[in-house]
Amino acid sequence: MTAHILDGKAFAAKLRAQVATHVARLKTDHGIVPGLAVVLLGDDPASQVYVRNKGKMTVEVGMQNFEHRLPDTTSEADLLALVAQLNADPAVHGILVQLPLPAHLNSDLVINAIDPVKDVDGFHISNVGLLGTGQKAMVPCTPLGCLMLLRDYHGSLAGKHAVVIGRSNIVGKPMAQLLLGDSCTVTMAHSRTVDLATMVRQADIVVAAVGRAQMVPGDWIKPGATVIDVGINRIATDDGGTRLVGDVDFDSCAAVAGAITPVPGGVGPMTIACLLANTVTACSRANGLAEPVGLTV
Ligand code: NAD
Picture 1 (cartoon, rainbow, N blue to C red):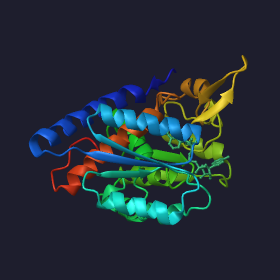
Picture 2 (picture 1 turned 180 degrees about the vertical axis):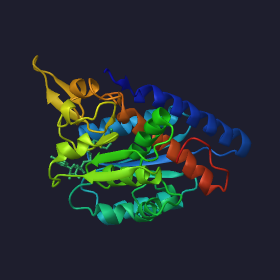
Picture 3 (picture 1 turned 120 degrees about the vertical axis):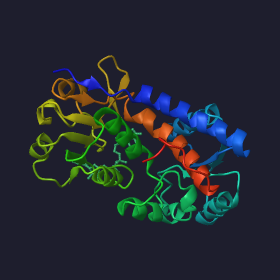
Picture 4 (picture 1 turned 120 degrees about the horizontal axis):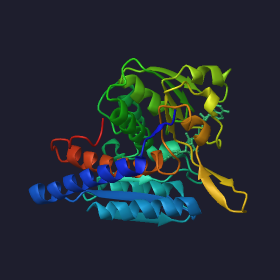
């Protein structure tokens, strides 16, 4: 079997086009321009690239982009003051504080200082609670993108057995909540799981969010299963360069799976597209307008 490739790059481009249409409608019908504020501390090269890409795509879909680049020595009080200022700014509908924060700052404190309505990352404790109880939340971007790909391919996910590998607050836990919400039977696996291979072999849907290059081999995959690879790992190549790979061994898994996301070009592009979608959703909610269809779950 050769797996169907779940093309996140193409899906994300369509989602961004939908976002752009909603942004144009907000402008013409209501005179509102959605705005996204991104706060970045320090000069980590990967975060710099990520924030630059976000800014570029925010502008491309017609939204306002506000970037706040601060030194990594910024005090908690100064960062909290900036968050308070963005909370109060009516031109800002979404606030994202790029993680991880420098070690001297309390991430939970900072994230929970963001107005939950503007929390487009969906990490505020209110949004975590709303998602966990099946209520309308801001949904974290990466799992949201994974769910959109799964729904697009399968239609209904009801009754499927999903194994989520990884229990982070950013990916694994919200992913499990979303799959439960779609009536999957969900197993969460993590670093202390005993006999991960046997568990993964039972899955109709595997979501790997670990951060270990190519750790899931093809012989762990049930024939025909759907594999969502969230991992982004850089490995050395024979010619002395590097390349990006996921948490699953793509070639051996694609030979067994029914469908699989590639790395790059799978989940990664969906994350930024969902961030833009969340910002439009947040803007609509903040202004008491009907929520755009198709931008969230
Ligand atoms: P994390 O380090 O916070 O969590 C990793 C999880 O993997 C932990 O819960 C841990 O229990 C589990 N784990 C570790 N070793 C394991 C093992 N041997 N067997 C089973 N489970 C194990 O990471 P994260 O933030 O959830 O990110 C995971 C991966 O996804 C990383 O590669 C990250 O770069 C990537 N990521 C990608 C996107 C995207 O947009 N595509 C977004 C977020 C994260």
